Length: 98
Image (cartoon, rainbow, N blue to C red; front, side):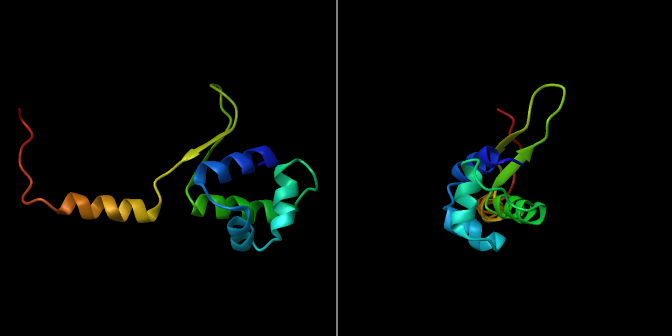
């Protein structure tokens, strides 16, 4: 993952650099510089940043024959729990034939 993809994932997940840096165990300034293409992080630090971004809702798309790498939102665990709660409300399940 390069800095521009990290920045896109962080913006898409709507999480501050401070939060991602804290979760990854790096300084916020180092993350900001990495996102701007400045100083590079070690492979271990990049892995921790990736894990932090995934934790906060980013889903990384690998390069394939249809296009390059990318990032998109995923449902967070909290969202999944809310959806499951909503599905349990409202009475018994019935046929949806209209």
